[in-house]
Length: 193
Image (cartoon, rainbow, N blue to C red):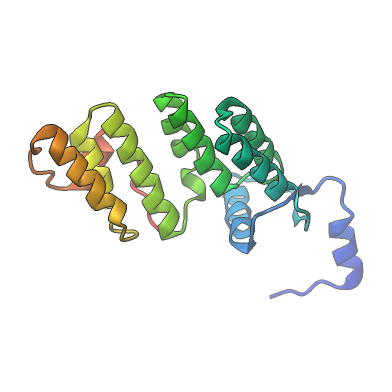
């Protein structure tokens, strides 16, 4: 691995053309660096050690708790301006859309974040939220498939509760078979850690 001297480091840090972001941890920095490389971005990426992302995220959180979902959406979107990965903000945007009854917005938000989902806990949450949306749309087979598939990534008692709910509503659904096939047929990608 090539090491940089002090002058080279200063030149990178002082570069006005570099992208500067407030990532929420080292993992998000690495996720964005890989994403930028994959899409052909040539700019340097500098992780600015500021609390801007967390401040905006917390503003959104407080607005959400106060049931100000539209304002919370705005705050979470502002958080993404300083942290384009912002996995927690993206999941909260999804939750705001769900509270507003905008299932399309919630689904779109989840699909837009798929490139940033590399940890099992986030992939599992992605499928649980997709399952919830499917159940809200009364697509119980897809909902069950998403919940079952989420277990490949993280064990959760929430899944059993959701599957029991589906069972109570439907009286039982046809066997799912291969959950991935059901998920793909709905236009939802299969994500891997």
